[in-house]
Length: 120
Image 1 (cartoon, rainbow, N blue to C red):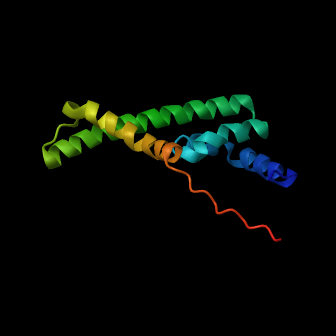
Image 2 (image 1 turned 135 degrees about the vertical axis):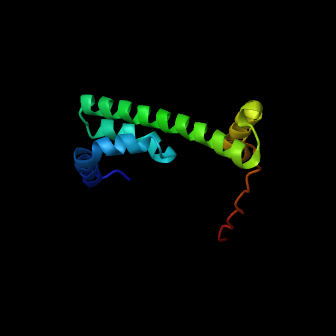
């Protein structure tokens, strides 16, 4: 699974695009999980990593705040629906939607593979 060639490719990638990878990873859920790990494995410069991590954090927070602000204004203007009055339900809905796949996977009955018949 892990080949030395892949490690060298990742190192070269982080040398060239490391900052953008760390910032961009904030906005992509699956990549967000692994980008810092890979940066550590390929020994990305710590100061560079911290700088771009902080820039990514600020960018993430700013876009989420501005996105929420403008979404509230747009929904209120278009539909006359004030999201602030229903914030609890919206938060519960987000939690349910994001955790439902995990819960379904955990508690759904597992299909067993049919037993292979042994040659006699």
